[in-house]
Image 1 (cartoon, rainbow, N blue to C red):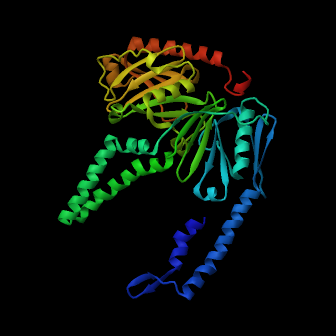
Image 2: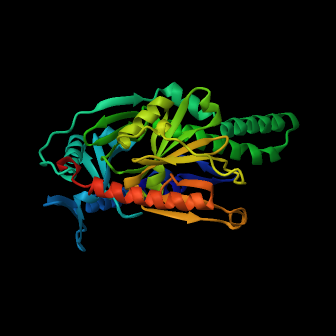
Image 3: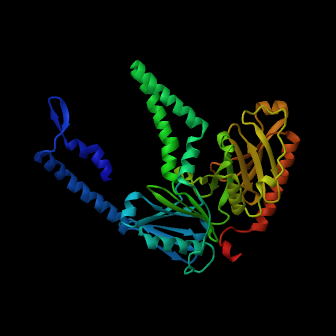
Length: 417
């Protein structure tokens, strides 16, 4: 609130009109005018924050998390602990100074399903996260935090190199340098229309992920996958077992020579901007580490051992479907050039199986099989299959999915199973 006030009103109050235009003149009169307006605004901001903080209460009632908000008009929300999909511990830069943390409880249910508890003391936030994870697993609330086994830590140099070593980034960097040279040599200001968007693109593609995923570590624990990352805003994310719906192993062409891969995931409960911020399970790592993490997320899985049958030679898809295959645990499809993607979904996580055919495919007698997960970045499909083969894939995948769901049972209260 104070930042918005300063940008829209506070800073203009510090400006004084002169003959040459507006200037920043910090005279006693200007400072007095600024303080007369700023002090009441600061008091309003503090009062608004305290009002919201005092009006928020939460407690555990049986198998439910109950959150009550509001002072004059109260709103009570009661959520079964079995619906918890992930629990994040977020510490923005300012709150780290005061040793505070924000607990975000992600629930199955869409865009506005999350519960945000801000702000708690750092130790209290860690205790709350451990208690919620224990209760969601079916354990007593006083169960201590489960130990963890470190799996991988992404070095800063490796992260920076992976962000720079991509075709779109290299192309944008060349365009930026060329536009600057043209601007300096020919004094052509119109090249700013090329240089500025290119610079913004580089910031978004390199600097933003570098700040977000710095100090990235992955650890395995009985209560799920634990991720820690962030340079300015630190985040500790815990995804309980069985909550990852689908995984994509991404291998850009320039990475394959170094054996690097990235893991993207779909987790039920994340939606919209939260899905985009929490879709990376591993920003970069050796491919065997990525495959090891996939086998931890989907126990009993060896992606490279799944035989992939090539798509029909009649296919004309620009995405170059390499093949698709299945075993008793997962359905796997591989596609893409120059960026190769291997999409993996567990049969127990499949929401539906469907067959589609566009106009060109119908003329060629082809179809695409989709194995649907909840909304997210991973879309599993087997493109350009012969129509008879596509129908057989749909039937066998649906049968495996039914059997896997019966065998897996309810993903909630997993520790008691």
